[in-house]
Image 1 (cartoon, helix red, strand yellow):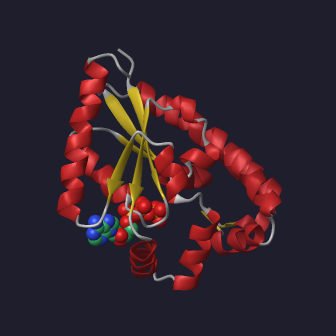
Image 2: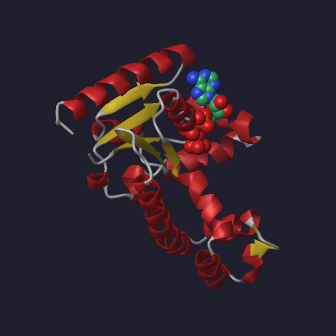
Length: 201
Ligand code: ATP
């Protein structure tokens, strides 16, 4: 039986990784696209070469990605950001497919902030969106990343709205109190198993 792919998305600070970790407690394998992309950017020789071609040799400091330099480059040049995505996303996609082949669970979770923006949603058997009020998300990220309210709000304004994400999702998790979130994850986990077992997905 082929392993089903459940997409998990939501805006910055909504709690995607927190929710993904809750799914892990049911022995569901989790693929965090952003984490894997960051790893691939420092391990894949092909990717390193392509990124150096795009941004210049300064894009790496020793073997580490020069994040500040790249962030400053793409901040003022949307075209460059698109070019970077066009290099990184296919690589992550291939890496995910290889990873998927090694999994033997009924389903896996693919977590990415940009499922609706960057992926073909037909690749997913079901999609879950994590939500929380903007003010709470801003506060969480400011604390987690030592960032500023202004920076986080500017990222949020560049992401697709929760309204659009919710309309296009099969499940929505309201991530406020952690215990309630765990309860929602448990319910959704069993619903997904039921959908798989009955052949509906
Ligand atoms: P990003 O888009 O930046 O990757 P994310 O959506 O994956 O963020 P998390 O990293 O899971 O969000 O959560 C953001 C921060 O908020 C973390 O520090 C996390 O511990 C905290 N957090 C998440 N959910 C809750 C919650 N229900 N109660 C309290 N803190 C929470």
